[in-house]
Length: 248
Ligand code: SAM
Image (cartoon, rainbow, N blue to C red):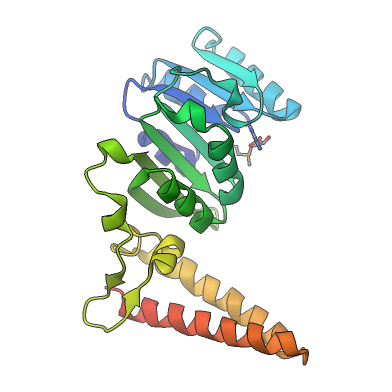
């Protein structure tokens, strides 16, 4: 059975799409997507031998070797031009996902949708999307087994009903003088912040606590550079607290 996280990612894939799951590990996502009839065929990409073998085994045991191609390679190198409609990349850092997309840019030309689940560094990934004309159509935050996950879905700017500029337009919070800058929107998520759920608040309270821990450590240092860092941290904490207090 799929985890709720992978299940949610799978449900973002439009029915009938040709899928590539990059960094597929055990190949659970493409197997479930093909088995359920959601997608007719898939590519499972893996750069490491252990996970590659695990994916090959999974696909063989599911009897889907004719529909799922398990390929070894770095990032999008495993797909051919025009081969897939949707790419999923989950369970890695946002910086790694962004670098996989950057290095495989030529393969993205025909891709209609990206479903991405960065473990950390969501802001780095949002920035990459913005800079490469991909527009977020959905952002979802969820908790499973004590971990918090964000799942970002994006489509090319040319087909998106909403444009990047509108999405990242500095946003004045209702009933407050506070304006969320583009930087803050990248961190918090432009769609998440407009419809925050309990998990969103939980995540950002945890983040504030982490920043406070760092601040406490820096406070013990009397180096000159520490003063600047303290100021920066205090400002960051204050800003986040203010935002959380003002969100609907
Ligand atoms: N996508 C699965 C999920 O979300 O459950 C597996 C996530 S697992 C933590 C990350 C996988 O990405 C590992 O199996 C790793 O070998 C693979 N990986 C890391 N860098 C990669 C790259 N540049 N290209 C392909 N796979 C990569």
